Length: 150
Image (cartoon, rainbow, N blue to C red; front, side, top):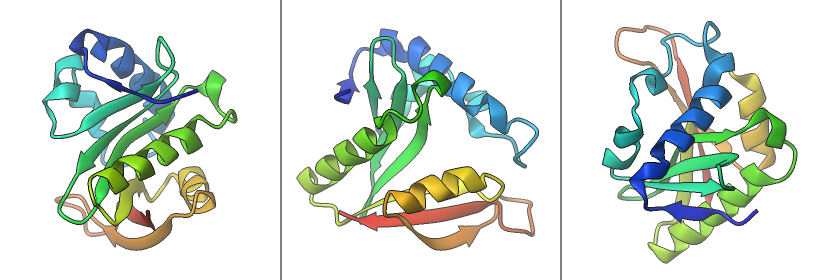
């Protein structure tokens, strides 16, 4: 259950497959649709972030992107069959270690307003809501930002 940094782009297809399966339940629930729909295996590695995963093939993953004052966690996913086994917590622990190694004081992530179950998970992992924002063209909040000190 130890997270590993994925440096081999040939693993991108397996990570993308995990993300697509894990995010499939959001289709029709969130508006606007997930940016995942425009992602390709290559684009996973074209970001400024690092792709971390658990398992071969991956059963959990997260993209960690260093920013000026935080380590941003994007596309955090755990396969349905692997949920409840501590994989999300292991990825958050790895992110905490990574943030400390980079001298960053906090972790940040976002989830959609509609995904109340994700909000509960992040709160249970010590994250607190720090803001709400709207996607371009939306008048209502669509995203909630959560942060946690490292």
